[in-house]
Length: 122
Image 1 (cartoon, one colour):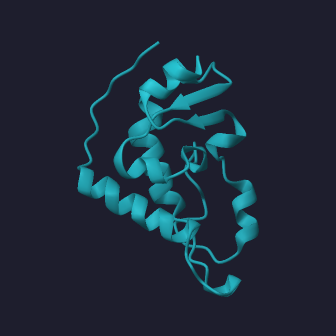
Image 2 (cartoon, rainbow, N blue to C red):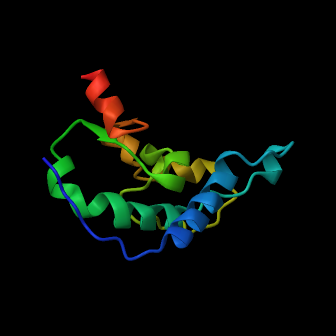
């Protein structure tokens, strides 16, 4: 089943959001104290823009096959929170991430490089 929706964000806005989230995932720091917080609000906003609009299509599934484009291909889609977080966008206590409703908690997510790759896998 297919679903198409128009995204209000510009490519530059999405690129900047993904770059900010990537800094927390691949920070290149030497100590745990220097790790930046994962911006849960920005990650949930991406979920709201790209994944949530098609919820009626994917929610009954157990596995999501996604083909992200551009900067989104640099972000594990499974790390998008499906619900807003009460923690805000900045936190230094990593144990609070246990409470986040990550997409991976409800669905297996397979990211593919292209729609052609899906045909090859089938």
